[in-house]
Structures are given as structure tokens and as C-alpha cells.
Amino acid sequence: MSQSSAAWSRLRGPALDLFVLGNVAFLAVDIYVAHSTNRFANSLEWVPLVFSVVATPVFACAIWVYWRGDRGWSRTLGLLIGWVAVAIGISGFVLHLESQFFELRSIRSLVYTAPFVAPLAYAGLGFLILMNRMIDPSREEWGRWVVLLGLGGFVGNFVLALCDHAQNGFFLRTEWVPVFAGAYAVAFLTLAVTLPLNRSFLNITLWVMLAQVLVGFAGFVLHLRGILGGFAPELRENVIFGPPIFAPLLFVNLAILSGFGVFDLRGRIGANRQGRGLGPAGLEPATGRL
Image (cartoon, rainbow, N blue to C red; front, side, top):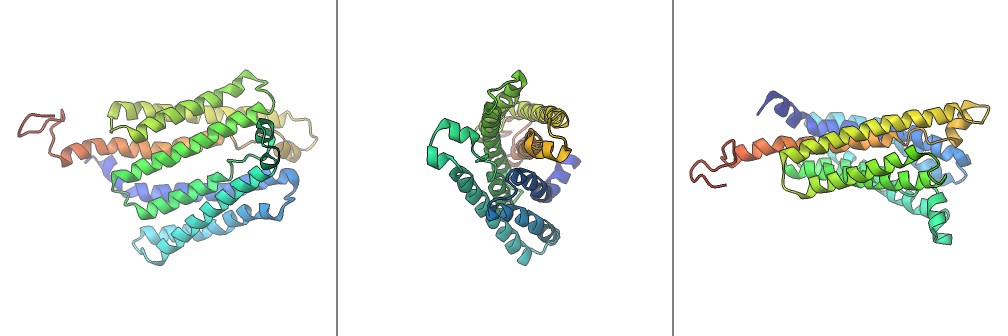
């Protein structure tokens, strides 16, 4: 095993937890901006914000203790935070749909309702916490679960990009880019999580994830230009009511998460071959058979 592979085998569990921690903290800012559009008209809109503010330092402590070897109360606390995040995500999903879609049940109400898949970000983060404590990071299933959850995020991101840009009828041609990019990400990650491990295909998938990062940063710049050139006299108003400033960065976020899983699966190919006693070409030394 190379030094880089050995380092990754030690760090993949803590790295995933730190990724989740950063997302939980950042969602506090995102939720505040999103729910400021209606000035937190429904008191339940404060729930995810309060959860992010409280859970961030608590989960940080749990991570520190858990990965230092104390798997008792810190594991239980992590599982509790994970299940609460899942509950908040699913509840928010239902509440967002109830805003218009369940009353009108039309494509128009689906497009112009509150972004109904957005709360599922909490559910996805919760499942990552649960998975990282229920599955040993040394197992191949760990990498496949990371890719699967990244795939779920890209499915939701595809729907968000399609619905958000449909609100203005794809006025700019560039608004189609995240839709097609999301579709490519979904296709490649679906194959990566279902097909047998193949180094060449996983390498291509990593390049696809890099392309998602570029799409995300480009979208962020375009959204930022729309905000800075907005019609409201105050920047705060343009941030709240203009293009969602953080939405394109979801491509970057999901690409990093999915890249974790794809990179992990790619690194297991050589280890699996050595574990089965196979030679460099994948041949059994005793029989010469594949």
C-alpha cells in the first residue's frame, strides 16, 4: 500500500465527518438567507437554523472524541444528531411541498413553490453521519455508500436547477448548463455505484466531478453578478431576493463528497487484487486463470 493510500485509509472517516460538520455550519447561513425572503413567517422556519447553530459545536466535540478512540457516548451523540438531521430534512421536504403543490397539484405550483428538495440536504447529511458510524470505513461498502449519497444529492440538485431556472423560462442559454451537468453527474455516479470496480471508468468519473466543480464556481460568479447588478437599492435586498447566491456551490459541495467515494473505490482496486493473491494483470498465480 502506498503512503497516500495508507494516509487516506486513516483519514477517510474523520474527513467525511469534517465535511458534514462544515455543511451543517454553512447551512445556518443558507437557511437564514432563504427564509429571510418571507421574514420567517412560519415559526417552524427557525428549526433548521437553530439546529445548525446548536449542532455545529456539539458535533465538533463528538467528532474529536469519537475519532480519538472513545466510541461510547460520542457515537451515541453522533447517531442522535444524525437522526435529528434526517427528521428535520424529511419534515422540511413535506412542509415545502405543502406551501402550494399539495393544494394546486400542478407543474406550475411545483416550479414556483418553495424549493421542495432543498431541506433534504439535512437528511443527506444525517445519513452520512449515520453511515460513518454504522459501516467500518475500511470496508468497500463505505465508499459505495458515499457515492450513493452523493448521487442522491446530485438528483436533488438536478431538480433544483431545472425548477429554479424554469421560473424565468431559461431566459439565458447558460441556465441550461447546470441542468446538463447535473444529468451527467447522475449518470456517471449511477454507473460508479452499480458496476464492478473499474479503474479507467472511476478515473473518468473523477474528471466529471472536477467538471462539476468548475460549473459550480462559474454559476456562483454569474449569480454574484446578478446580485451586484440588482435593482434593489441595498445589497442585502439583492442577496435575499436576487439569484440564490449559494445554490451553484452545491455542485462544488456534491462533487467533493462524490469524489471522496469514487477516490476510495478507486484505491481499493489494487488492494482487492492483492488480497485475492492476483498478479498485476489480474491472473491467479497458481492457475493462470482470470
